[in-house]
Image 1 (tube, one colour):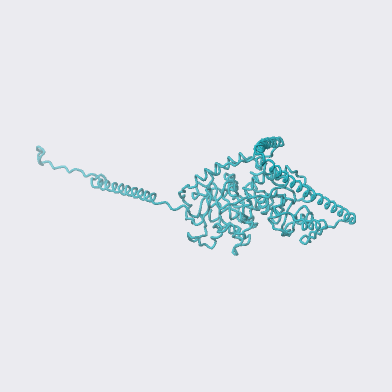
Image 2 (tube, rainbow, N blue to C red):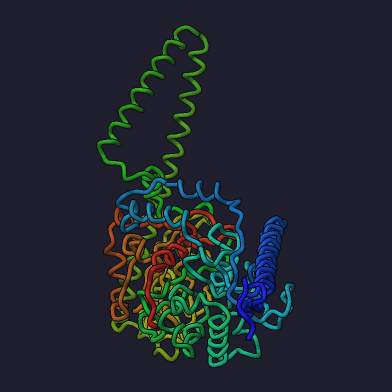
Length: 588
């Protein structure tokens, strides 16, 4: 063995190697990978924000488009910006408050006016696009069903004018929005009248299937229907087949709001608190000047625009006029004294004028005497004829109501009219007017059988012998009698021409009934009281009739449609009905 020395001869110790995980090469690689990930993330975020800023800086599309030409994407419709060019018009319309009598035809005008202004400022309606369109030009085979009518004033539309005018007015109104998240109501723009005239889906069952498929599609492709179960959706129908349009879809029947002209409590698919009665209007030009109620009432009607003038005010008015006339007469006397020679000439002229007036009065008095003699003679002749004929002529049965023959009294009245025709611009001298078909209504048959021979009323089973509009102009009361449906356009026609409506239609949910007090400008009679019709009309006093006539003149604006809607017209009044139903909850 070698001896131990100073340690230089000892063997060198080898250092231990570190584990592989802690080697410097591995740490550097790890840091490099981490830096690459951070750099990639930074580039991605930068490119995203730059693309977003470029998309926001692009010019916005034009907003004057028709929402019907849009298409449903695969996801819910994204909101589009809406430029408010009609804000000034909205403010102007909201601030319009016409002069309305607090005791007029409204339940509570002040409360209604406040809520109406709130609606004008805040209410928004979104119109669904045409889901069946194949392109932006709406060349779909069912495009006509959804698009507005090109000529809503076409006379062929007739009773269905309101259905098309609502859509036309909505497209031009400031209530329309293209941002569905801001809308309180959603409009499904299919037209029942167009579907009825389409050979592919003209039957009631096919129309109901079409509506059900349409609702299924919008509920599948958009989330608006599903959010409320359809309680904030509505559609319009004036055709009688529209009452069955919701029969194939549970949600449309129970939740969606139906704007319908045939608003009847008796119909199983009409829900009074949910659905809305639409004013049924015939396309007619505006009647600017109404025929006065009666010759004796003309002065009261003109002077009573702001209320009936009392006798005390009339006496004060006469005194003031007498004082003015006295002052004028004093001035005339002073002038006569100054003018001298001219005074005598004026006196002569005045005497001549007075003599002419006296002669005219004498002639008129003579004419009156002749008329009285003629009336007495006619009265005596009638009495003689009544004594000779003890049994009065019996009325024809209801089956022969279309070919009714007038009795002797009616024939005499017609002869008197032919001998002494009335002037064309006469006052409302006829008590009541009705003209219409009787085949589809038992109530109308009873009306014709009872009152067709009455000489004070114009009751016709079909077309009248004079122009139809003339019957409304010359009558005090115009009858609205239930036909196949509870509704007809006769109510709006009567209001249009200033004739007091007499409504003989049970179960009719009258339009705008939550705003208008119909008993203040119309008469509502039960079917069973047709035999008392004349007695009920004659029992109305002259003051009551004038009050109803003035109220009727106030509400005429609510039964007019315009292409561009105006304040308190039919469109805005119907929109208010939707406004009151905006928070309804539907059945899930």
